Image (cartoon, rainbow over all chains, first blue to last red; front, side, top):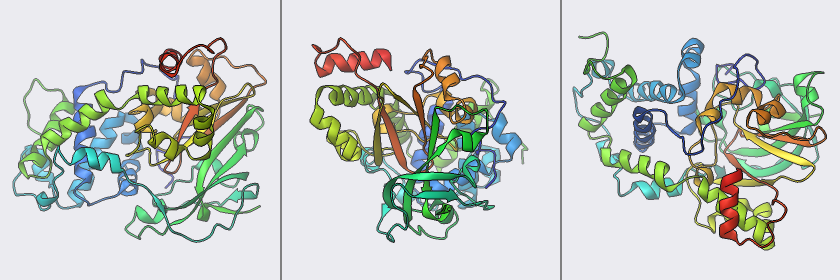
Length: 218
Length: 190
């Protein structure tokens, strides 16, 4: 979607503020959001693409005015309400008004290390790739109203296939209950001049990881 | 019926809102607060950039490992015990005298957790995400890194589930150092 998350190459966001590498949270509530979000994912109502789509579906004015973990929290509330596990009345009360549905799936502290160690690999058996390393490809003018991982700055531009990664779960379908639809995943490399115009850094090349449906021969 | 979460007045709005949601989920038996504590402890205290520093130091001191890293970073890194969530599919990219690599996730915050821990705030913030692909030289300068004008800059936008780890060049004059000393050096210069 042409949502607020798609900001590569956009102007006006100000200076980068470096921090000490030990600095990972700015408040204790941020830690709880991380933990509750990961624990809630174990209930099995959504996948990573659904949760990303919930975050980027926040109204742009809300997205840009929210800190990172505030975006996570708002999306988590939305997902839990959509799943039917939490009601707006409960959020307003700050207490449960009825029992949970999938309490049998609750992630225990003892099971947690195994869940984190397993992660969520996305490589799957899939069709043979139609492009090879070195091929010229153009990013399609792909602008679905739903979830996509093709950044807008790459649309319409010609690049070179630099790597193949096998077939991976296709986010554009997986975010919308349409199944994993695995398809070949590539790294495609572009000259910055093509992406960002005549003032672009001549020494700069940028790559994206692109699923095959994002690309066409060039 | 309230039109906003009721909470202790001394709590700030976000603390109250997060506490409300966690309370609801715990009361419903959907979330175990001990599991939440364990997740936080994992990423605050157990998984962090020292893992990545160990990988870099080994790549500097063990050519076979560096070759393995280039060929199959997921397996090479897993052999050191670093794997799992947000590191399922790893690629290592190597800085050279001619080329400097920079990793970004313009669409969200993808970051190789098992080797670098949770992404720092600047990595997740719109300023870095928007500028890293367009003006990485200026961004690097804000981190105190000045690159020669002729150095090629290669930016990797992590738009899929591939996670990138940059292997810096081994600094000159470090020939006598073992992997442990090199890892400390990486931490100091990362």
